[in-house]
Length: 246
Image (cartoon, rainbow, N blue to C red):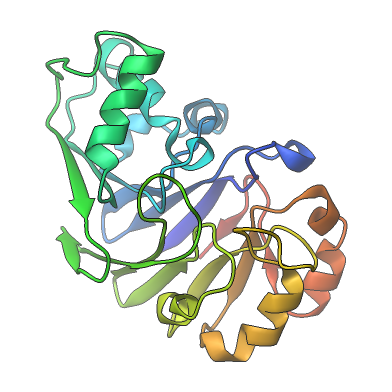
């Protein structure tokens, strides 16, 4: 399993980082974990063909995590002549919210007859979903977004990738991270228990209970970006746009 960080930023573009999107190749499949508003531009900037995407897995329905999808769909339909099937897997409510976003950005596109097979899976929490070689499971976390916000577990090729999504501390994060070869952890601020987000101090306190082999920090505010040397010294990976992790 190989992961490329397409975007690791927050909603505000702190540090010039793009919105959340991770490009992952595993078992002959290419998929994205989240697809924030800047994702299509960043893929093309890095020479990655969006037509290669077989699936997109969404943690929650905020624009910096799914807002690039209407642009991806428009590109697939009119610019790159996509024919490969595409599946979007997200929390319950994804299909409805995606249609609303498409209609808001590009009126008339929500009911379009796509030139490629397109499927949206509204995945209930705590339910295993198999997409080819990918075993996908989500657990609810705490980050109000108009639909369940989730932490995501994806197993493929004997490896387990886990992602906290955005959330303040909840015990379910232990279920998300347990046994992960790589746990991508939102870490918005150094301390202070920010509302609906994680801080480094809490993550440090709970680190042993997470049970992940490696932890990579993402979605950092300017204050946390100023502390990345400390995080690296403590043994964390620190995401940056363009980072590749095997």
